[in-house]
Image (cartoon, rainbow, N blue to C red; front, side, top):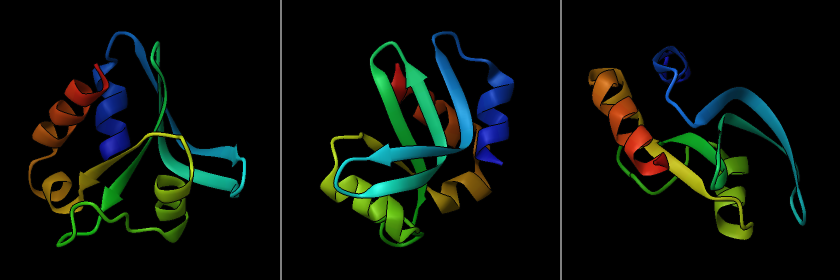
Length: 96
């Protein structure tokens, strides 16, 4: 749902890939739900747990966030479900 909204907006200077595979040194292969590529680099985008906003839903993303240099941007799952336009807008602002 979030990927489709981000992709639909076709934001200038950012490309989104869904279920992108990344090989991360020290961790191995990780599938990132959404990978954003900008001039500043690559960002892994994932949903956070509804109550713990700084905790990814998936353990592989948690490892990526804690043990690698890949920036991980978490988006509140409840915000995506209740106010998708705001979730997308907030995310695009962070990536700008």
